[in-house]
Length: 160
Image 1: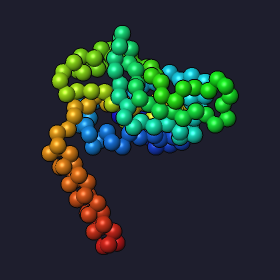
Image 2: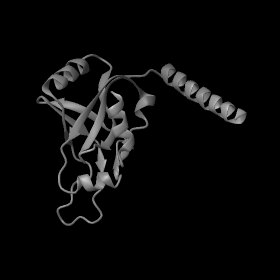
Image 3: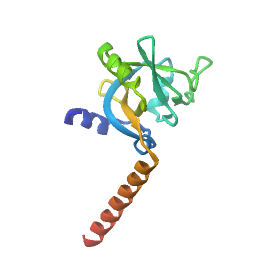
C-alpha cells in the first residue's frame, strides 16, 4: 500500500474496521476490492451502519463473496430496502482471485475482511487480507506487546 492509498483511507468519512481480525490472524497479503451493493446499502454504509463482526470471504465459481457482513436497513428507505445480512460480491481481478483461491487451499489460510471505506469517487471499497490463524500462545504474545506499548506510551506522556 502506498502513501496515496493510505491518505485516501484516512480522509474517508467512513471507516468500518474488523478489530478482532488482527488479534485472531496473521496478515499475509492485503487486497482492496470493490463491493457490489444494491439500492440503499451505500447510504447505510455512508452513515456508518455496517459491521464486519464474524465476517469471512469465500470463493465460489471464480467469484469472491463476503458472508456475514451486516448492513443495517436505511432509516429513510421504503418498502424496497435491502436485506440486512446477505452475501455480497467483491470485485477483484481474475489473477488476484486465482492467487487467493490457491492460497486458501492450504490448511490454516483464510480470507478476512479488514476495513470498509469510501474512496475519492464515492464508491465503497473493502480491504481484505489473506490470513493465517494464530495459535493461543501467539494471541497471548500479541496481548503482551499491546500492553507493553500502552505502558511505554504512558511513561512517555509523563515525561512530556
